[in-house]
Length: 372
Ligand SMILES: *Cc1c(COP(=O)(O)O)cnc(C)c1O
Figure 1 (cartoon, helix red, strand yellow):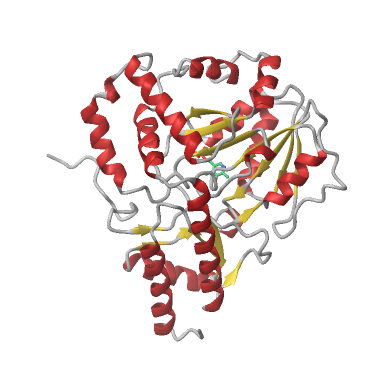
Figure 2: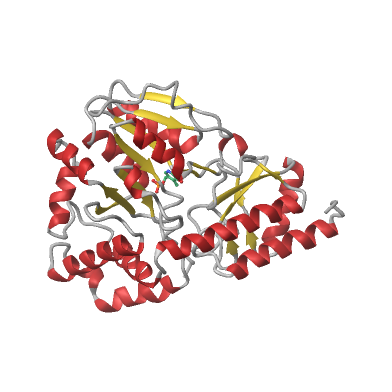
């Protein structure tokens, strides 16, 4: 019989170490949990059954507790971060949001919003500086402000102090795309009303599921707007989740795996600290071997996605050598595709793997007689 789906060179086989910032390395325990999900029969259960409802409830509780989500904030599961962009545009505003962005993901979110709503304002800022809040007119209390916590395309992050400052200055609802930081960093939840992330980044899981967190103020706004036009209208999703059900047949396997993996995790305060230390070490390592860090501001550098510059011709060689050594470096994104590579510093990646990465660069640069 002809093989149907088989590995090709373009896949990252299990023996390889991937530093791609999404889809990224998944926790190895997932293999056994998938088997367990099959054996428990949960995958054939109706999503209105007791078994499913209990499993969903346990997963939501686990996410809220491990990520230290504040009392009163509610957790929902949908399909992707992209879907969250759309849910927020549909269900939390009827006047068009202000988007502040410095990279490809934030910009794309503003574009999606602009196709759904009129009056969307899109403000781009530099990757080496924060937006000047003095000179911006922030939305009023009935408005919506959209931010990207960790811009995966260029490796920048909004510091907690900036988010707190925005919160001080505006009574608007604040929505934050935290796709490449949630479950990696300890998010300052109270500084925003809507936070979301898909699970193929810091959660260390396979794609096809996203976590959406809503504050009491966000929930009140959605209830007041009473938007029921879509299968994924927020109020409709919430009514289902209050019964531990979902509006449509969900990604049961993804939800099950999320619960299992979160159960195994340390509380976020602890794991975030380790991740930040590892990021600092990695940045100084790349700097010490003479590579140029794309983001120069240490305050704005992301601890979870590192962007490193290289001559395009040399980068081609380095990526090829890395592959031969069993290492996949993340490609650059958008305009930076040919001249940068990205390294995911996500929790599922082990210290040993980071060590292997460093050793690879040291030995390669010695062979290439690159000045160290
Ligand atoms: C990866 C990513 C997305 C898109 O996630 P999907 O699961 O493909 O919808 C959105 N925003 C940011 C910041 C991301 O890193």
